[in-house]
Amino acid sequence: MLAVSKVKAVADRNPAKPANLQRRTLLRGMAAGLLTTGLMPVKASAAERADRVVVRKAQRKVELYRGERIIRSFKCSLGLSPTGPKKREGDFRTPEGNYYLDTRNFDSDYFLSIRISYPNEDDQVWAQQNGVSAGNYIMIHGLPNQMERPPSYYTSRDWTNGCIAVSNADIVEVWMLTDYLTPIEILA
Image 1 (cartoon, one colour):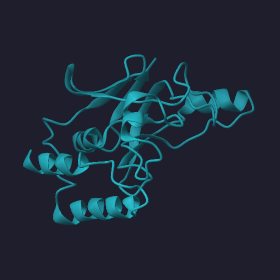
Image 2 (cartoon, one colour):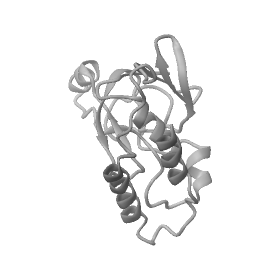
Image 3 (tube, one colour):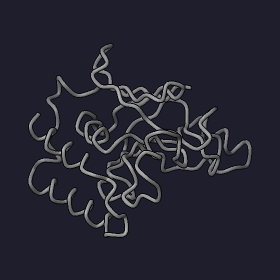
Image 4 (cartoon, helix red, strand yellow):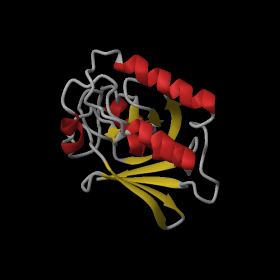
């Protein structure tokens, strides 16, 4: 747990530093440094890792489960239009349904991101039947590397294009406590 504490301490450092001071480069370097020092890939033991993730949109919660027990719970922000399921690209909604975590990116526009397998087969069929693009690249991620607003903006409202955003410290925990293909259920 010492490695997690060190990573969380780094993630929680003052995010109010000027964004134009190569923030993204700094965070990329920090993530790369964590990887090369062996801190980032440290995973919790199999007995401590989540076997599924549940997002409760109405409560703005991300919950990590091991069996029937919640092992972590985090506050989250959603898409700018959070009510209802995502139906098409550009609707600013967060999907609802069953997916899995399929790709991890430490070099994204946000402090770490984990891709959700949206669209699933049902989403694709609906989009095709209605002649629209379902969209893609729905992530769980931290705060933007280059903030255009004060940090309080990102923690007090829904602001994403349809993703699920948590604090930088929380995305580190989600990253370390989940695996490739961990199921995620997104509820209304």
